[in-house]
Image (cartoon, rainbow, N blue to C red):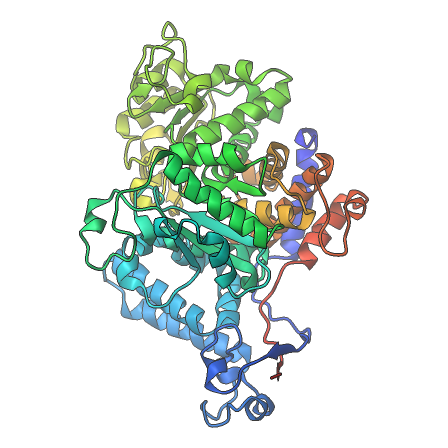
Amino acid sequence: MMWMNIAGFSKAAAAVRRAHGSRRCFSTSIPGPCIVHKRGADILHDPWFNKDTGFPLTERDRLGLRGLLPPRVMSCEQQYDRFIESFHSLERNTQGQPENVVSLAKWRMLNRLHDRNETLYYRVLIDNIKDFAPIIYTPTVGLVCQNYSGLYRRPRGMYFSAKDKGEMMSMIYNWPAQQVDMIVITDGSRILGLGDLGVQGIGIPIGKLDMYVAAAGINPQRVLPIMLDVGTNNEKLLQNDLYLGVRQPRLEGEEYLEIIDEFMEAAFTRWPKAVVQFEDFQAKWAFQTLERYRKKFCMFNDDVQGTAGVALAGLLGTVRAQGRPLSDFVNQKIVVVGAGSAGLGVTKMAVQAVARMAGISEIEATKNFYLIDKDGLVTTERTKLDPGAVPFAKNPAEIREGASIVEVVKKVRPHVLLGLSGVGGIFHEEVLKAMRESDSCKPAIFAMSNPTLNAECTAVDAFKHAGGNIVFASGSPFENVELENGKVGHVNQANNMYLFPGIGLGTLLSGARIVTDGMLLAAAECLASYMTDEEVQKGVLYPSINNIRHITAEVGAAVLRAAVSDDIAEGHGDVGPKDLGHMSKEDTVNYITRHMWYPIYSPLVHEK
């Protein structure tokens, strides 16, 4: 197992990061020609082939473009600079305007580029991932989903509705791509912490797949965002004349599952080697669909398993921040606030890790975990308890049923207070001050709910009330905090983007037909080992997003090796399972890296 080799791996990872540090990089390789069956304006209207002013004169003549573009030919580098300058101009011109207005303006600008020129869009995104990820992904994507019906301009992805029952097998062949590697699907029932947004939740799969392209190098022609529109219980949307979804209450029970079943059968009939990521399903369906499909199809649920992996990596990091060996994780007392799909997913994976490390059963491993939902501490006295929460219910003789967060923190004195409640500000001053009495020399506070308004507390409040020696992580980005002693309170964004691209890419390239717990734990362990001891001692648990492609390669390689270890790797393309089994650790990283797509203008050759 990885646990004993973490220091050596951290040093190796740091050396690679220094060698591959964030920098703007334009490839000098010459791409092979791309066959195109279009000419003239049809090419300019296709974002995959369009190069805007980047078409050389020979291509303009060959493809019937002369006269349809301004005469100057610009290189991709010049187009890149032009866009970045326009973006900075937008930033200057919107200074002083409300944050939501500015965020949407930036999103519109990037979205227009995406609609027009995909190659340049992904080049800009990859080289500026730290600045642009918050615009195309969380937190701005939540704002986009809330306003999606008004922002809609052109279709992206596919929509399967309750009215399409019985037609999905034929519908799936309407998608023009012959091969799809990665699918992200939502039913819009629980978008971030914003609730039921119905069909407007399509913004989430679109944003996630942009991250797959940017971080994992999945070819953008091989990704597919999916919206399963089974209705909405959001009355505001049902009364909104601009709402684009099915105007009916959500399907429930077997009617609901029949729609999901039909889609999954259709998708895997056409693309049997695709990987499907479930995203932002309400808790009851998140767990039920995960258990229903995980052993039959190659799928995972990012809210349950991706969030859990990122959180587990952070939890392991907090042990290192205390100067303790990782084996001490089994003694950490952890209070989890939020018993939805994410909260239960985190708790379950952390318990699995404790069980593995201590060599005990998962039931025994729940000893130091305390679960709090909207009704307070979950105990065995609770009636109508969610089945997923049952293993974590405490004996009320230890702490009373329904005890508040403050009560539990004061009684337990936990090493970690972790929030996935979706309730903004629930870690108020009294709760944070109670964490000063933690049994840890460096208490950890994870306010992981998205978007920013739903964060359990801000970074400023956490350091102010819980003390400057805490370790802090959040789901949405916050700025580092300047402390009174002149030191810096580091803010860690515990974002799923560290893991889901690597899980998807590693699974795809392993050829595995299912995603196992071992593969997910391998991803979390890899991320936990990425930082050096020096960085962790400063309270830095997660690497810079600027290194996301290298992080993804490492995580993807760990997932692939776990698939080989679990004996479920079938290989990919010309690389068979035996070839994968003979690869060294370095070989697997190189194998993953070689398969990561990078945006380069290809010469276009017309063919009738």
